[in-house]
Length: 172
Length: 172
Image (cartoon, rainbow over all chains, first blue to last red; front, top):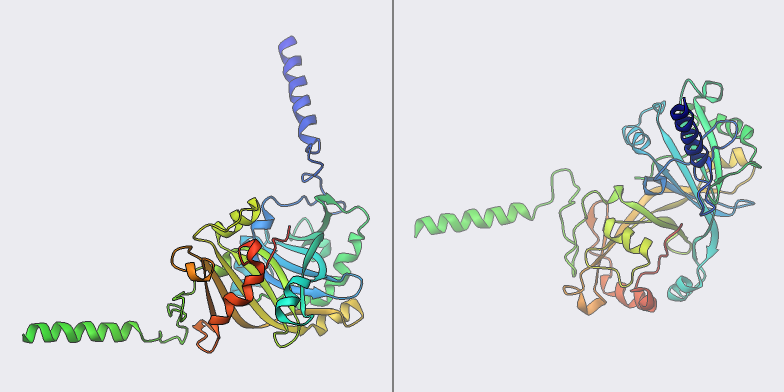
């Protein structure tokens, strides 16, 4: 019995340690609320879907990356996207580049500044059936953005229903 | 003598065929002038370095992708970039998105339209010693852009000498 009790406490301790945020301060294993999505490991290495610029309050430059399931579906023009699709939207502040402008001889160059936040769309047609089969999440500095109104994600994406609620087209 | 003449004409014909563009119209194996660079296979799958927007005559949205050597060097902050580094600059026309603007309720969204051209910087410190160790190339629709003034690439990149002639910073 003592052996079992010891084993159980080791298991409990290990579990507790696994749930602690890494010492770096980046709680990359913390799940986003509502949809329970964590940051997919290695997403920064994913292939490029497209790029965009949003003016207004967002005022960012953004890149859409996709995991292998997403990229394959995009390139094959497959709709709806299959379960397992994850689309990552990275965004950075929209910053004029003095350095580049000097070379061009005029103010024309805008580059990616500090990262603003990262969003994910995760396809799971059963788990997220109520929101078109998509779960939505937003992270800032590696932490789930608890202030983000994740309930508004799906209503905003609804106009793109004909393209399985995904706005971004693949950039050839 | 007849045999040699025949062999020579076979060689000449083979050479001529090798220089013909593929039937598809995409001459992906055609080398760019001056630096003799061909389109690196699979570059569209490379990892993202950063994104940018150029106004003016270019009026594009662009993505910088890097091969594994490039990405490793960027992430390690390694300068100069090692031989074997290839940086790809993809660009698309800068197009307002009516579809996105409707969702935002204002004109603010700009997305990637048709591809304009693709440029490559290839590091080979010996082969391209005269131009800072970099070879430059530009392709449009898979064909080397013979009209591009490739001689102007290096002079324009010279102001970035402290960063091994590369303007683009890695976007975290």
